Amino acid sequence: MAVWKCNKCGNTVDLQTPPNTCPSCKEKCEFVDVSCYIPECGGAESGNVNEQVFQESYKTPK
Image 1 (cartoon, one colour):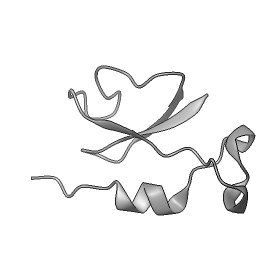
Image 2 (cartoon, rainbow, N blue to C red):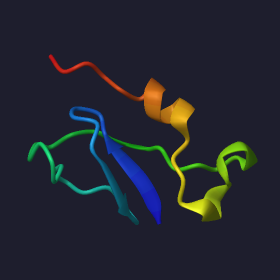
Image 3 (cartoon, rainbow, N blue to C red):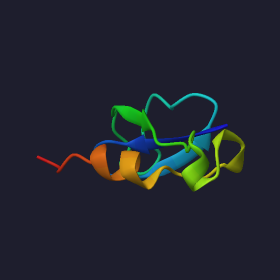
Image 4 (cartoon, one colour):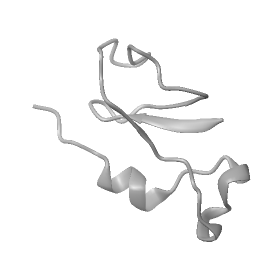
């Protein structure tokens, strides 16, 4: 399972694939896979979020 982050509101969901509509902001948003795939945050099987990717993927709402 992957952790997907909405680029509009920052909400995260644990799903195989990202949803079409964000369950938090109820809009059609771009989702970024922020799952950890490196040993420093636990690796792919940990279910952890890669904080660096999480921070870099945030877009300020317009």
